[in-house]
Length: 216
Image (cartoon, rainbow, N blue to C red; front, side, top):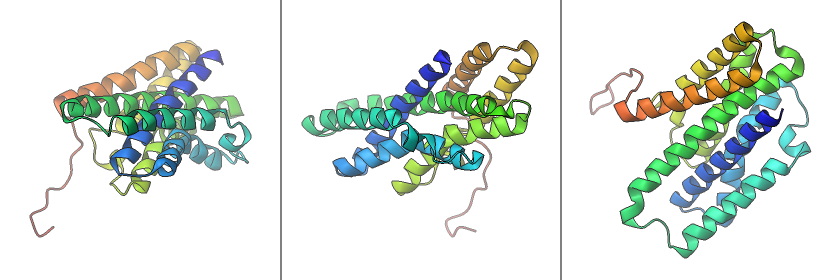
């Protein structure tokens, strides 16, 4: 459980930073930045709890992670506010930072989703565990993208969601074979990060239809 709490905290901080930076980039005020950061950090867990019928969802029962996300959002906002955004010379660093935080959030919350499902008694339902890991990992990012008026990254960006699915499958298989959730969590967390880094470096993307200028 202590390892799961570590992954929870990593995912919350990482996605809160990702949401806050996106909100600032979209010229939201401090309230909008906070809301976007909180929903990015907690939205995956909220969606997971609704699917599992866990009411009220944990973010409303235990406000710790909501508070963490809000604190992180205000720190990011304060830094950007007093530095008047991101200097042009640091624009590349900004892009890499956003990718890193997004990837950490995906990997950490994938682990969280699988483990929450197992802890709720669904350990034998492998498909459900993988799905819960998937929706917990990508749910917050989808809410972030929709609320910031952009195409959700899971549909277009460097096999964004596929590493989460692969990581979830590996996690349940490793537990089945080795009967160790801790080892399965660490290895699958690392795999998601490695796949995302490789996809970014080699520009891997899933196939899509190429349309002409008329959209035909």
